[in-house]
Image: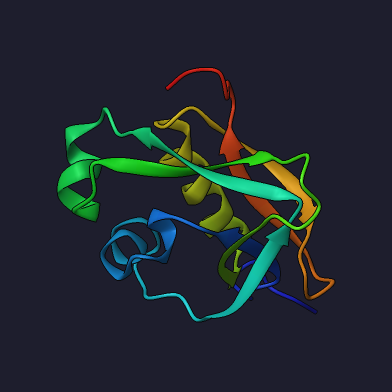
Length: 123
């Protein structure tokens, strides 16, 4: 029987969730992951408005992905195994940036959650 503390959920990160300090602050541990890519999407930068996130990540902009009309486009990043509790913590962290979580198929064929800007027209 699986316990809720067993990492069973895949989340794909192309931005600040790859940062060790952000992981420790949100999950209490450094995540283990492997490189992957999100095909059919392009990367774009969005200004970070929360000073706590700027201080924690050391970055002034969030990475964002949007569906691309170019089938050659893909966004590289890292896929992590996390728990249900960590997914809830990631939801809370990404909500500050007005992101929403969607299910995608990565280049590896794995299904994973990814956070995308809820309103892509806002910069």
